[in-house]
Length: 119
Image 1 (tube, rainbow, N blue to C red):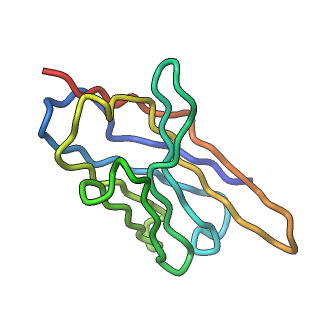
Image 2: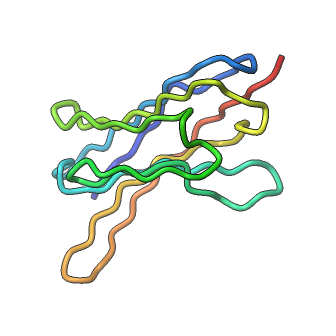
Image 3: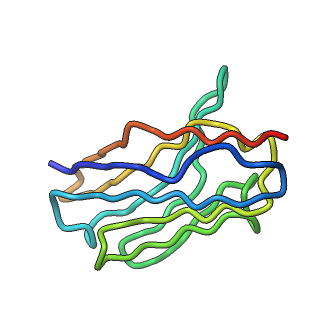
């Protein structure tokens, strides 16, 4: 079992920055791919960024060039650095830990954290 806990959200003005953190405990962190998703009211959950166990990164089109995902295996933590924030980035951000073993997918989710971009 893996426990996933997000932190770092809050209210920020347009153009500002925030860094989200996600700690995944209870298993071997380095074997999990980590990701951030977000969901705004009335919208479907969308992928923000992923980072594989080997460090390969993928970003959603709406955040490319503004957000950076990174991971620190020594701290069992994945980060999402968000710069040049826009009001449309307002959403609940969820951290995901995923491992695929013999074709079986194990997904673990955090409870989500609110990010609000507003003046």
